[in-house]
Length: 211
Image (cartoon, rainbow, N blue to C red; front, side, top):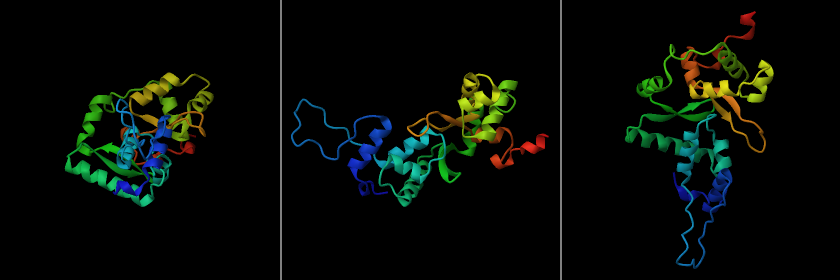
């Protein structure tokens, strides 16, 4: 993808807003003093997309990416994803970018997923307390769910249990707090689906099946 298609000024400004820092300017001062450090160069759009994928959370979509990289078109977004995947194949990386839920996620290649099992434990090692299972079920059925929602439904503090489930790779941050969303929201992961033998969330038992 041609990185020059986007304005460096807009790119720097939007990326800086995400980090809460001063925006990069497209042009350096005409005659900077010799003792001063040269202004920072904004990262290439593809590198920013790669960083967003590594951060994780909800699948990365073109509209979400364009909020960070102003001027990024859906076509440019798809081209960048394809180019990153080609680079990963050439470099024999253990991960790749896969489509999921109208967006894209960075995930391990199948032959490397055993590494994750060694880190997080397999199905037998993923034993959870009754309280943790309750929280996991609430997240699964109500995602994206906030801690306040889970606490209210359980009538108890759920913070430690949510953190435990995140560490075990069963849930993840689906949406981070921002100006429009005051709280972090949680959702289940691919590992959750794998451990419970589900192809997608549509395979979750319907509530009436428990009656």
